Amino acid sequence: MRRPVALRLQAALGTLALAAATGVVLAMPEAAAAAGGATGYATQNGGTTGGAGGQTVRATTGTAIHQALCGRADSATPITIEVEGTINHGNTSKVSGDSCNTAADKIELKQISNVTIVGVGGGAVFDQLGIHIRESSNIIIQNVTVRNVKKSGSPTSNGGDAIGMESDVRNIWVDHTTLEASGGESAGFDGLFDMKDNTQYVTLSYSVLRNSGRGGLIGSSESDRSNGYVTFHHNKYENIDSRTPLLRGGTSHIYNNHYVSLNESGINSRAGAKAKVDNNYFEDSKDVLGTFYTDQAGYWQVSGNIFDNVTWSEPGEDTNPAGPDPKSNTTVSIPYSYGLDAASCVPAVVSATAGANKGLKVSDGSCTPQNPDPSPDPTDPDPTDPTEPSPDPTDPPSGTNLSLGAGADGSSKASGTSYGNVRDGDMGTYWSPAGTTGSVSVKWSSPTTVSKVAIREAAGSAGAIGSYRLVDHGTGAVLATGSGAGVISFPAVSLTKITFEITGVSGTPKVAEFETYAG
Image (cartoon, rainbow, N blue to C red; front, side, top):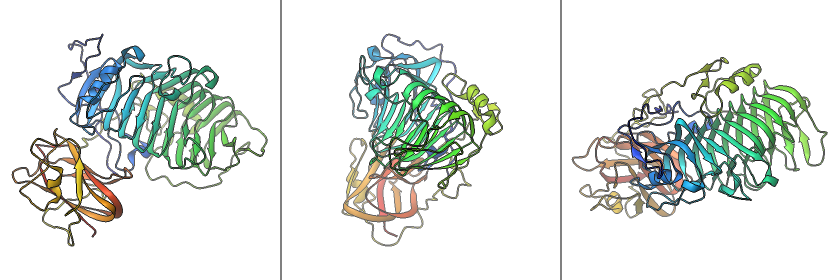
């Protein structure tokens, strides 16, 4: 597993004048990202690094956030947006551009990647304005408050979700946030943290969710089972009626959370979902774990939890509570390392760490809040990582170069270059991104098996390519990560489009050939 990204907050910016009325985006002289490193399932599938390695800007309005997204070289150019102040309908407009797809009634993170949104200074509050993530990947949201987002009444935003994810979303880390409503569905509110329609590899950590009818869901219906691999840890759920969360299919890891006043039900695992539920503290609540409101069973593995003044319903046709003596009815394998705090100290450690404007404190598994540790630079691969590919341009793959005669496309290209130059077999022609980073793809009309890629740089540009991700474009799965050009090997996969994303550089990248091989 790659080590998490270098993440830190920018320090003093007081000498820069912000245009408060328009929320003008100001470029910072040095890149920054979120503090700490991603945890849980967000570390899988290539990891979640957000805007690390890209430009850092400051925004004080929703329009300025959209301007920052739209001002990038392309939709994959890394960027960190530092937000301060109150973001609402009055200062959030749609902005157009080739690198964005925004809307006026929400913060729209649609068809983009490699973005961090982090609250700084006096704090960032998204007031009655939700954050919508759609067809996007590698997003970090940290140290912000999202409150009172409605689906009915006035004003409405994001279908009533504080943070909502849908449609082929991958690798999202939401950390140290406060998500809150002022009532349930009858008052116009919906979920605080919803995932549906093929959303995977998500972590919600050190956050507060409160005063809502619905905490959140994974899967919009019993048939929407394409979601999963979600971690919830060190969060506080308080005064929530149900869905903490509701799980339909998929796998979740739920540990070291504090649940207080769950009024109707809590973790609702159903429709084949599996949840590993470790060392949580449930307090003054009802039916905190089980399958509820359906006859389609879900499953759980439990250990180390504390149930303090929890009441349980009798089993029924559509009610299967795990208590009053919860037992495991499945096993769940967790692919990442993590440290468990004892359940007895969870209320104290979560109180000291969870939510926006808490100094981004975390727990180290010893029940003692800690300041976040700086993490290594993502452009410096971990030499001890056995999964890190080792490109070697002197060892070309054998067999037929499948790129010859295939199609090609990508992000914005530099003037005078062509996508087709990477699959024409001619080292004298090349593709170059319009910005410092970008992506290029090779595609076929029918599924093609690939297990090796050779990236060859044009003459005079050797060494310009820094960090990269190799992605199955159809599924969003990360096949390999690393740095430099050369030969990249990975487990054979059948696909119709493969994308080489350049995420870090030391010069102007010039890809002469993007060769693909079956073996």
